[in-house]
Amino acid sequence: MENLPTTRSDPGNSGVSSVTLRVNGVDHRIRIDNRTSLLDALRERLGLTGSKKGCDHGQCGACTVLLDGRRVNSCLIFAVTLDEREIRTIEGIADDDSLHPLQQAFLDNDGLQCGYCTSGQICSAVGALAEADRGWPSYVTEDVTEGIASSAALSRAEVSERMSGNLCRCGAYVGIVDAVLQAADTHSDQGRQK
Image 1: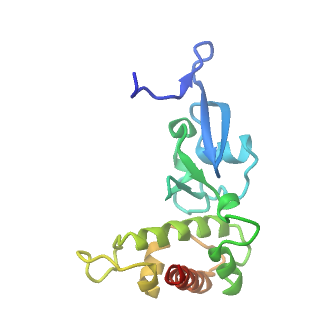
Image 2: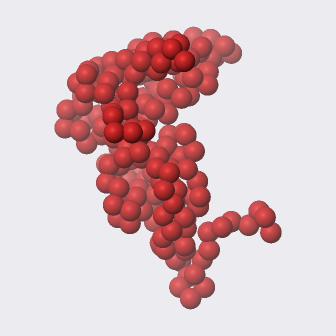
Image 3: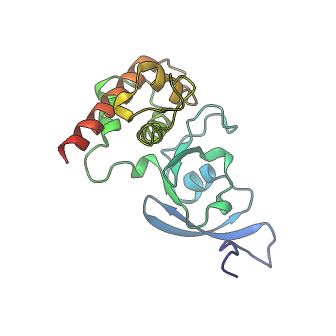
């Protein structure tokens, strides 16, 4: 019995389920159609419109959010599969009233133009830096057996590769890479001060 999913289908209305979405530290109990994507649940049911619908096919990255700390395309995941999982959107990236270091770095480095892709870019960058801190190699990591030491060791090529799932139709890629590198340095500096 312990391994049964906590999502419950409504027996009187097949295709509709109740689910608890834990978004930015807050639990939201909602009834939704089983075919509803996480992106649509966030935007239409919870009013969290920071994640954008670009392609609705997982190809642009505008909908990127963090699921249990890992970046995912929210347009590709059914919300009913995420009962009580930890979801973090752009609205919950900053821990307090100040900007997250990546948000500040995007401003400092002109890492945006129209802004449509920015929330997905920032969420993806948060995930990419966490992956680097875990030592996970990318396609361009020179020695995949070694991985990388931390996000502070990221090169421009590493950042470009790790962010390649996020498109910017305005072409702000230089600023985006600069922003991620600045945030990686800030993260590294904060770690040394602790």
